Image 1 (cartoon, rainbow, N blue to C red):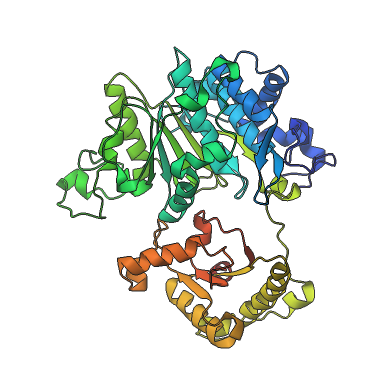
Image 2: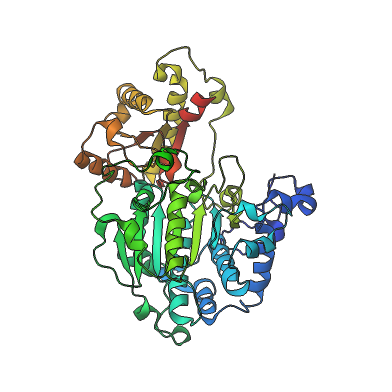
Length: 510
């Protein structure tokens, strides 16, 4: 499963479809590539390449102007040291945008039957698509800039609807995060529309005769901050559980819990401190695009996530409209049975991202050190895995010394199998290693990634403080050097300075 010998080292180089990584021996490339990749990706890569090489022929004027601005126009941006440097999007980000625009503008995709035309495997059937609206899934390795892709898709849709007379895209956007941790990260980028102007997302006024900057009128609403909305120009950024349909979502015999279906709806109390029913608000606009970050969570058509989006689409249909497009970005677009989301249209796998230095290279401790690891016979978690914890600390200390020379901080991450063992590991680190005393942050999360009050015994103010500490842990001013948790690293938490990971969660499962 090696990379093609001519695979480019630079993440900015345009990748030839014939040189892309695939999960088999190089000798099987010609005979098996179409069957070993997401079924739509292989053909789409080739068609998008031809379209790119042809100068985006057939695209709308708006799409062509934006694509050329983003990917074919030089951009100099100011750096922290006061100098200027040329900015480029990674090719993976470019290909994702080009593929989405190609499918909409050129191929005219309306539904799953149009999507099936790009199947190279011969195995795709209509029954594999759960939704009745346009849904494109972008597979990109964690850390390769999925939020940038979302910002570009959002801007493209906004301008396309504004400038193209027959456009059925949208100028309202529901941006969904799977949990509060990812939501905080996206909000940091979107607050004040920052990402659209710090990156060259918005063309200068006058480009192709349009007043792009003047016309980009959008308001960002986070969770319960919604008060008065306009018919268009809204970004609703929310955790998925705030979009769940309320009492008006009819129970179904397909529900996992069928008591409501057979016995009627039960009285329920408030499940959060929501001041505004965001679900009602987004159902009251006439045009809407859904953008899902970390969308591997939306894998089951019977889950509330999928049902809520379906409910939004159906309400729009009742008003003579429809959900314009759903774009999901995720590193792992797979169902519970391991099958990949058939809607996957672009794929930048981890192997390619590592090869091009977009993400960190995973490195194991040396063989001699690993050979000394012993799982001890003990009912106490930290005694049982003391060798693994100690080796992790030794490796982290090496990284910490190297990072300190650069004025940066290395962080140790320990993933355990439950919250009780999180506390055990935290206490063990603080009492065993003097350099970690007072420097261990324990984060207990619920299944949805929310920092959990029930398992910590902390009140809301303390939990908000914990969230704040978690979000700024990369900073050299943060006192924390180690993080202990169960779910948080798997839930899209973007911490750049984690250098050493001890996966006790996986060891315990074996």
